[in-house]
Amino acid sequence: MRYAEHISELVGGTPLVRLNTVTEGLSATILAKIEYLNPGGSVKDRIALKMIEAAEASGELQPGGTIVEPTSGNTGVGLALVAQRKGYECVFVCPDKVSQDKRDVLAAYGARVVVTPTAVPPDHPDSYYSVSDRLVREIPGAWKPDQYSNPNGPASHYESTGPEVWADTDGRVTHFVAGVGTGGTITGTGRYLHDVSADRSEADGGRVAVVGADPAGSVYSGGDGRPYLVEGVGEDFWPTAYDPKVPDEVIAVSDADSFAMTRRLAREEGLLVGGSCGMAVVAALRLARRLEDEDPEAAARAVIVVLLPDSGRGYLSKIFNDGWMRSYGFLEAESEVTAGDILR
Ligand code: PMP
Image (cartoon, rainbow, N blue to C red):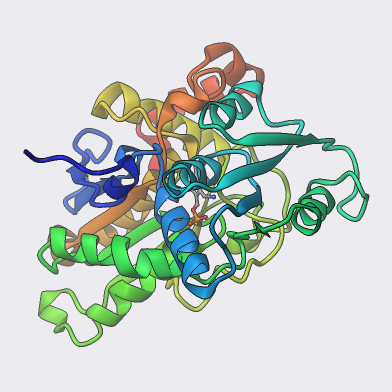
């Protein structure tokens, strides 16, 4: 009989799938890494598992302890399912702008959800940050993973995502593209791919190029923190989980282009994925277009892997809702994308 002892054993080992129609006119092989096939439905299962195991090893998390994290989504699900296996409680702090659906998902996994007001400054006692810090102080045996500064986030990608990409491409990957949120994915995976390809000959593709994708307005692509609607990526500060020396470049993508591509991935490629996935695919296609313009022979040999962090199920009332899209003018923008202007 072939079975896992627990769902948390099935984290990682996600497949690569070739993109076919959105890549029209490009000769590079563009492969998507499908992270929604993790048991909690996102790439964040990987960091949850590693952060918890490391905290157990260091003694920061003891039997019967409580995990306290300010998170509203994917990281909470990953932490909750690993915590269940190991008998920890979870308390997640979410600002009140987070949808009821997302809070319900966390509660369904057995977590306690504490809601804080959005409209207060960070140093206010009721802010998201203050409340989570207070809970850590007040709950006996509490431990806060802090995905923005925990080095085990990037380490989980160095140990799992990076080796998977390298092995599944038989060491032929030439470019790796991922969105930047905490920066854990691009830092850990990129660092591994740089290390393993450091001595690869130019004929075999040379050193892997690591390319970040970022919402226009976020600091990673030179913005000032201006707001954007794509969720899970971009920042208005520099987290220590992100090593800015790892990406060889960062490409900024607009909300309109990100969402239009997200809808195309569902409709044309059978990939119902989140908005940060559409964003990463736009960056991968722009990269492929540039390679094509610069050196068509090298472009034909390029193997571009783009990581798709989560599923589209959590965005049905936004990206996949015509009324919501229209209210921001994104449907009009989509027609340009559909006409082939996405790569400009
Ligand atoms: N997309 C989504 C939907 C996410 O939740 C995250 C994690 N914040 C990312 C992309 C970016 O991943 P990372 O934090 O590893 O940079």
